[in-house]
Image (cartoon, rainbow, N blue to C red; front, side, top):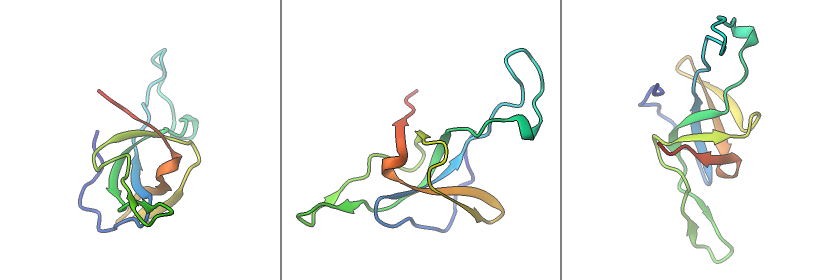
Amino acid sequence: MTAKQGVKIKPLSNRVLVKRLEADDTAAGGIILPDSAKEKQESAQVIAVGPGQKDSNGELISMPVKEGDVVLMDKYAGQEIDLEGEQYHILRSDDIIAIVVE
């Protein structure tokens, strides 16, 4: 599943705009879960990336992720925002735990 592209927002510094990926509706045993029973999914798709942060010498540290990457993030990381009726999160690159490699 891919998140809606074309969002008109550009994160600053070492911040990343992500959209959480939807959790499965069915448990391992085939039971259909209501929305209230679903766990917050910790995987998200990167929608936009800031330019990076500067080090003590003033040189830009490149970002570890790029648009389109699927990442694992801390469960309660970042700030939730509503853009065009969709829920997104803006978080620091340090809150990203890993990039999912297929």
